[in-house]
Length: 382
Image (tube, rainbow, N blue to C red; front, side, top):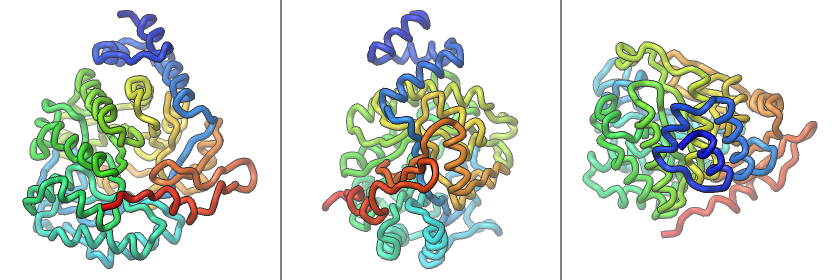
């Protein structure tokens, strides 16, 4: 099927097949693909607005026994520069971000076999107790699977215990590329795609909302990227639990994978991925552009290639920093970047509820932040 027929199919609201997705990725003109994705963006989110969240991404430990080739952040147990923060130390870090306006804490860490299960539960409980209007967006699927290995508990039981402690969302990290071939090459100890999918499937069944990610630009082929998107689309059909898709490119500096992949993907590839994901993931409400991982200009352009969200302010971030990739910003910068791209900035919660609309001049609040969080934090009941 040619590009013209695929475009007509998409515009008619019909779902494209895996084979058609591969053809789009390989053959579509970038600007035409971006235009098609932008049309779909407005079908999903008709307002000329771009959302963002004030968040932080601290890490509780860099100790990890999983040895992923793409990771510059982790340290083996016993390494001289390994660290693990106590619950109280993490509360201090979270408190500093909350004082700067953070409403979401995206907390992740290495797979540290020395930590007891109670440590994870206490991180959630204390965050909810001390900062009741902050969403604990904690622990990627690979961390949940590590807990499963360490403590011998079923994934469902781990998620139930975390839910009882106060969690109701999960970040999408640890997916890399949901292709058995790719994962065997770059993160063999994490298992195949089903390990990641199992966590999100169980989380959705328990009432969690989660995000989905993809790290590309290393050893994958177009077929692997479409396999990844197909896994996500199928699970979303089944559960409806994903809020957003967030792709970013591999950063090779200081990683073992750098030997084979010395440079990462560029902005053209990023825009192609953003546009393709908006077309293929027809059941995802949001596609997130990343000013942080791809650069501020690429992030702005992505807002015209199908993305409707601009991610977070990331008050603290350490994983990309370990790969010598550093982008920083402020709330004012994010608002300005969104405006410069031609959109109205809207601050949101983790669950995409609106907090503030930054129209020209004084920001308008649909409702007080506290009220918004109380109304949208529909924590699952036991």
